[in-house]
Image 1 (cartoon, rainbow, N blue to C red):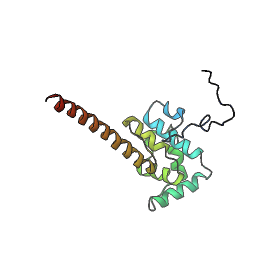
Image 2: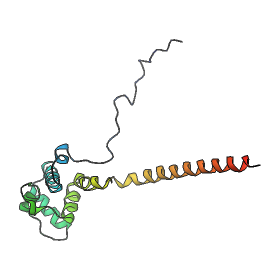
Image 3: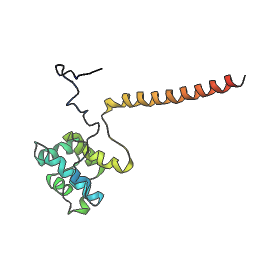
Image 4: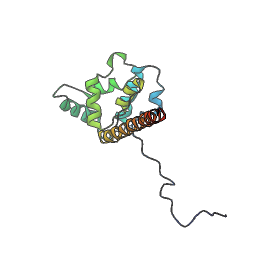
Length: 153
């Protein structure tokens, strides 16, 4: 039987790749030697990708943190690999991610823990997959039990 490929019908998935589920920092960030350097590079990466000035971001972070003072100079220090004593605090990192909408630094923190940061809309899909896995395990267990007691007659 000679099967020829249909060249007249478009393949909707030919050039499609699924979007990433997690936002990951750039390879340059991941290759940094120490965790402090990776954090500084991740902060710099977030700040460089923004349309707003660092002053505006600092003001928004201050508001997000309930009035806690965050300045442009602080952001500059957080983004500098040379300033070991100025690593961004977790609260300020959360504020930076919240006001910029860039969550890659959070993923950077989770990578060594073998965890991922995902959009909350995907939680249901994960729960469904976990439930299906459990149902498959229980089904295998039930089939094995059925074979065992039926074979014992």
